[in-house]
Image (cartoon, rainbow, N blue to C red):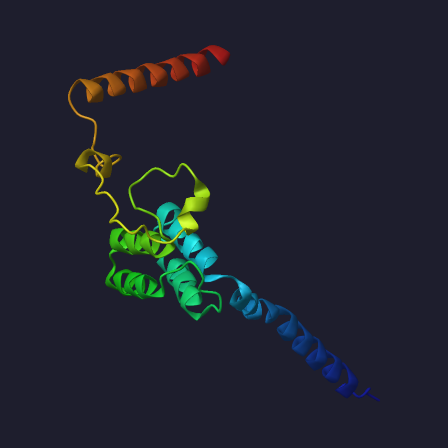
Length: 168
């Protein structure tokens, strides 16, 4: 005589539905972002573009959330829309520039007072940064600088090899 297996089948189906419901909870993670101000979302998008340029989807998500957010105080939404179009075109530099301008910052200027980022755009146009300031970080070392950096690197490598050989 065999036992009926139907109760075990129902328990298995119930556990499967419970697992699906538990794993589906993170899908509603964006619900709380509607209360986040647009300025915070734009700042987050700028941070993503600066630190993780390969995360274009995350930056686009933050820009979309900023456009849909309820609190637009201190944010130029037209510039955020322009930044969204620039991001879709793949122009990261222009996207970052437009997002900074949307928050009221003068791009290229050092941030001495972080609260000034949320200020309105200045009445006078932002000063154009000098070309050498825009090129910082883009110039590869050459000439004597390159040779000296290579020499220092070689000395450090040889020193590390000597230390590992000596400790064995």
